Length: 286
Ligand code: BEZ
Ligand code: FE
Image (cartoon, rainbow, N blue to C red; front, side, top):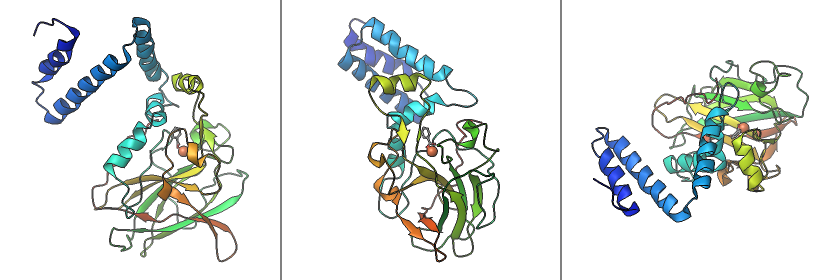
């Protein structure tokens, strides 16, 4: 169609894309264009503001590389990653709530025996036992479930951000026993700021937002016949639980400390998986 006014544009673009053979792509792009046009009509950016917006998108691409994924970070601080998680796995009080993957998960964490420590050097910090059980929706234990765990150090850095930590420090892959139980030793993670040296940091400063995530441990739990669970557990004594910069703290993911039979501090992290397929995400950074 030949465009006669701004009002024609949305339809013109939708018509241009109408022949997309992939129905889901057609639906997604149609909605994207309708919402993007509605957004532009609402905010009416000046040409200069439009240029700034495009520069932000270019900037998040350019700031993405070997050690940082600024695109994932932008999705996280805008609440998009958590929203996608919650729409795919609404909170139902039964299966474990999801949480964002974050940029620091790595493939091929070292396989560990139950009870092993994931502290791979003399990283100082208060020791912690993490233990729990993996179950299905009916409460049956899932023997052999794989629990991939990763966390920041007590100074708030993942090993792949920190030259002082050995490779794969504070990461491990555990296999639940015949009753679905697992346990391992670690040190208490600290809260940390998300990377703020790129365009997302500029945005947070412009919004007077702090860049911190409360301390947490990440888990990816898989078992044949069950949907992959990606989640995080937060301890209830942490600061900033109510202002996580990435909106990852969901009520059911806040755990309380307990004490082991021999008096060590422990965090109980039980996981309930739903039926589905194992899908391993692409690592945000290599
Ligand atoms: C994380 O939890 O590892 C994380 C999430 C979003 C941004 C940065 C880090
Ligand atoms: Fe994290």
